[in-house]
Image 1 (cartoon, rainbow, N blue to C red):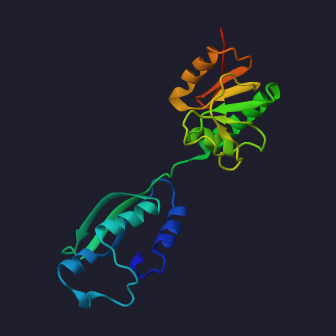
Image 2 (tube, rainbow, N blue to C red):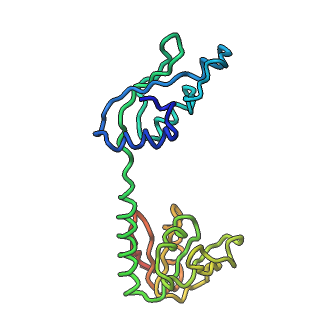
Image 3 (spheres, rainbow, N blue to C red):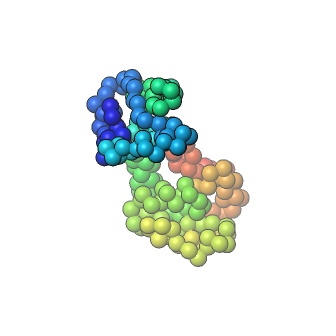
Length: 211
């Protein structure tokens, strides 16, 4: 394969990748730009060579095109970069979409039991989940950080407010990473009559208040 002659080497390599079976091996060779620079060989540049590669840029091209580089060396008196490659299995991110669907379904069921829901925590996890929910799903987001208070969440524009002494919602969901259980204990120490949930392990886990 003469990718130094191709107008779009990454597109060409990606097309080859798509037509190979998993784990298929291959060899790619290109003239070494390192060699030309090291030896001041300006007369070696050719008009029909649209691209020149160093070992670093060649490795980057191959890896971003889906190939694992098993071996790379300069051969033929260092004039040529020779790469032994293998089609790499790309990561499958569909599990995240399935998890999100499960969380949205669980939240809808929670809303049927508790129409007025507040969230405690305006961190990245809570803000991401809130952005996936229908408008009107959550009334307020509580957060004790003053620099977050008075602002709104992305997408749904839910007000971020200081945590009240005693919430008046039907349910509070703590989405604050490692602080979620501490928030649950804070609510347990109050005369809060609503339900308390902790978002943990991609689930809304109800905790006992004053129990």
